[in-house]
Length: 157
Image 1: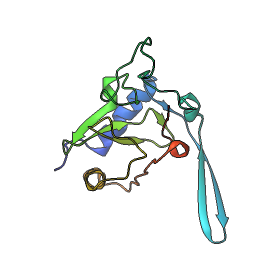
Image 2: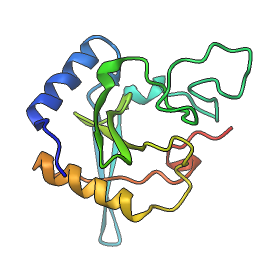
Image 3: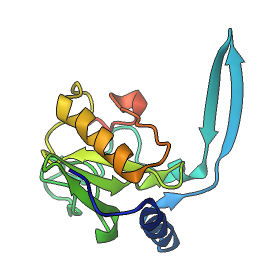
Image 4: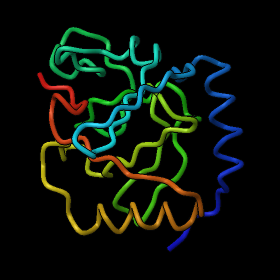
């Protein structure tokens, strides 16, 4: 299965979302180091300063009195404040969206359609198949990152 959106179209939509402040993106500085022959690269950007931290849920699901912004499913803690953030549903198991807090241009997220699955859960075969589909269809040198816990980016309550 492939989807019908081009990398150039994704870049144009990304730039529009940044201009409208629907997503946060700022140029980054890169620090390269080598430790015992192992190359390291740190990317530093102010775009992450807007990201909720310390386990505060993005969508307010834990507070019954709070106004709950729209999310990517009932179980999701990832806000969906702009319809332009959604790119495509893929394999009926995932959705491809723009990351709201970006270091790279563009930075995308693959979210499971089952919004109750969490990043700390092991990857399944369908997760890898969808990542391969996206990388193949966009025909660009991309790299997937798997956030698998609070230190890697997952918000915990």
